[in-house]
Image (cartoon, rainbow, N blue to C red; front, side, top):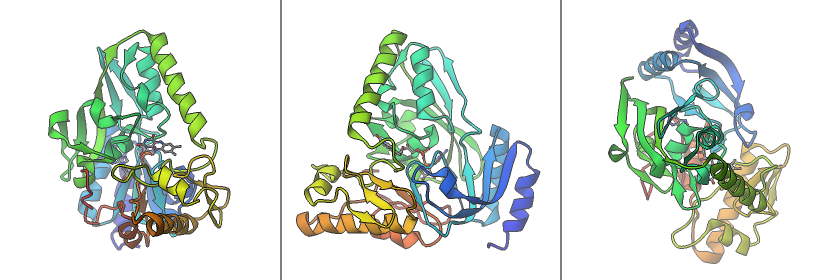
Length: 330
Ligand SMILES: Cc1cc2nc3c(=O)[nH]c(=O)nc-3n(C[C@H](O)[C@H](O)[C@H](O)COP(=O)(O)OP(=O)(O)OC[C@H]3O[C@@H](n4cnc5c(N)ncnc54)[C@H](O)[C@@H]3O)c2cc1C
């Protein structure tokens, strides 16, 4: 454990509006249901508590990372030597202001879509069914059906590296395919404003329903997964390549490639992070041997022992102390 962890733990425990847990199993906070314990797991319930924790972390020398719903994250079985700050569920408010939706970073996209529909505001329907938070979605520039979160946001408020609250207009931010300015800068997304257009509430609800129905038809939504494991390679689809090499049904331990969608890896019950990594390696190798393409992994990696694995699999290692990985498309 980092020598400064105890004093940081005492500081965090003294911050009002902050829940601090020790040795929290991250398997309970990731959609894959895998991941060992975090030394400290922190849930802020107010913006002031988040800001105080954030400032403490910047000067502590202790490693940390931000967590949303953990739906795009593979945490090692050894867990995290440092602090995990979870903005979900404590900071999940959503407010309608005219034709804008103001959402805190820990609000789920599901809640966002629902509030927008109830208010008769259209624009977010394409995001329905993406099971993450506003913070995680902005970091990843999550999207579907040709639209990404970065296309819809008009302003984002962050805590910067010095703990200062800064509001950035859309034009000051960059978004690429599953990447954003937030991948390059050590910022904590605090809240975001989305610009929407007036519509009939029933029409918006109907569109959301249709998007969700299409997802149910194509994706194994009843099982534990992290969505698409691999990014789209230029001019092709990871799912098509994986299917062509017979990846569907491939298994390592408790991890299995979905028979419904070849780009989904499922935890069939007792998978470990090591099983999932081994299956990712196996599937990538098959695609490389047949097509000469190394698929880049979309899912971010975190925790002890994952830094080198992330570099090998072409994805991000989520940690405050690692060098940000500049990825193509960012
Ligand atoms: C069934 C299923 C379907 C999916 N479908 C899609 C899809 O269609 N399209 C798509 O793009 N993705 C999809 N995903 C992946 C995932 O849901 C998205 O990437 C989502 O946006 C991740 O949000 P999260 O809150 O879970 O982030 P997490 O997984 O918790 O974190 C992801 C990254 O964001 C960072 N982060 C989290 N919060 C903040 C913050 N406040 N400030 C700065 N950084 C932060 C984390 O440190 C981490 O690096 C799917 C996942 C599942 C399980």
